[in-house]
Amino acid sequence: MDLFTFLMRSQSFPNKTIAEEFATHWTPVFVKKGAYIARQSEPNVDEFILLDGTATSRIYDAEGRDICVGLHRGACVLTPNIARTQTGISSVAIEATSDAVLMRINSETLTELMIASEPVRDWANNILREELAQKAGREWCLAALGGAERLAWFRQRHPMYETFFVHTLIASYLGVTPVTLSRLRARNA
Image: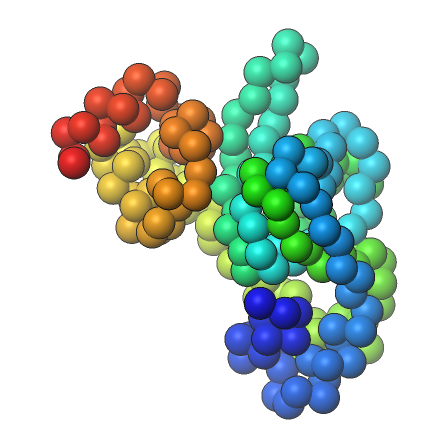
């Protein structure tokens, strides 16, 4: 999918001229599987749209163990910068789990465009609302549901993700061990 087509899926752009102009501010980025789009504890001032491919958001502890906090499949907006950084430093690592095509824009540039254009502001605010809703939904899932219900929630919320992401990442995302996820899958097969 190209950026213009992705932008036009939104109701925020009343005509294609505004979306076309907005698209000119983005830069394409091509990354190989295993490459980092953002590194935890390093500066990051960009916003990203994943047009094609898959990526994960993970948080690492001091010993290098990671927790998967986001699974991304293009075409989608990666977690907005304001939600994944503190004072310009990334709180998460975003890694491509396949070869990926992204579009990148500096966060300050996006803010300037939001101030200047109501459709851009509406688009960005809708993206942030959707991200907050997704994060709240996952938090609710982890707090309120048992393992089997988490898997059902995941399958309903993210159809086909089990074919795109490895077992261990899904288990981490759902807050269960890989062995538990295997047992749950076997029961629900």
